[in-house]
Length: 396
Image (cartoon, rainbow, N blue to C red; front, side, top):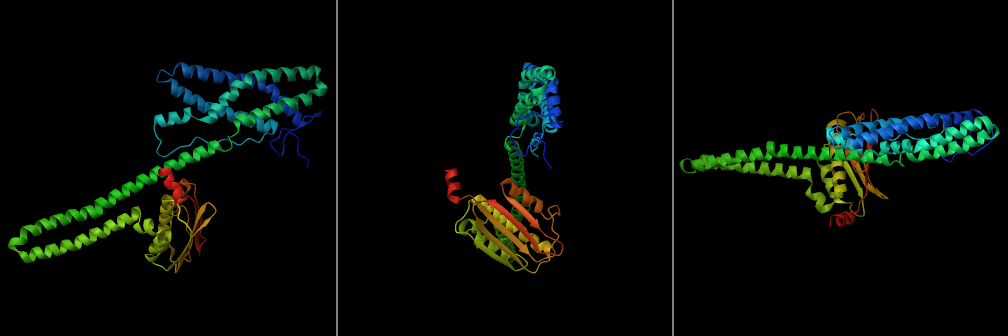
């Protein structure tokens, strides 16, 4: 089957030619529709900028401009659809406006709309189209009467210019808008995760070590009062307090390990992951093949990823054994955790898998879960490799 020249296999414009076919008539219709579309877009743009700028000193100016920019996205969408349908131009739709879970309220909404590059480029496209629309409408109309034999050639040349303008101003900027949206979303995930971790630490301190230390202080106070009158009772109370001190110290150690374990800082991933594996309820084989250490932040993410995965193995997998492998491939830190359990794990299964995937995605990592019913379950995670020396230099 031969593809029409109006639907090219590449982004190059189709060559000019002398032929009346379906694609030529579509191009002629597109050129004749340029003028009314250009007038509508130009009026919208001038009105929006004029009114928005004129009323910017009032409380309604900037919100009106923000709403108008949302409408400009609609203009761009209509023009992309017209170019795709009538000119065969392959133009991807830009990403929708990014919505961070933390950026709620009027002013974040206003600012995100005012700085939307997709809307501003659509306005620029609409503003530039008026003179071009007049030219293409006039030339096409005259050619229909007096330049009929060369009209396909003229239509192809003019619409090739339209194709270039549409690609230049209405296409996503090499994925830039999508990447910005992803980064804004990832920033929200990182901030939310950090806030949740701080709340967890505060709760653990309040309900655990702090409460135990308060009880310890009260017990020692009572022992002090009984020291003279009832030395044996005071000794028993001091002995109980000594036991409470040991428990409080262990709770503080566990809390510190949950923030950043000392063994990870001192000895790296191999020793730290071996320590995690020793606490798992099933035998775990740990293999770490790293000739150097990544940045401290990457090590921490890798450590807590494996820690949570092994907790899932202990609680949910019904496995008899598990394995942890860590290695480096080019500029990526690779992690694979596997168990021979019942399988059936899902990202939406309530085992924290979705949270792990979000955390890795927030640092440009990947999280792949393979867990058929009956097992085995294999989780493969990737993190960007950032050298410890580079990270230290960046903080210096």
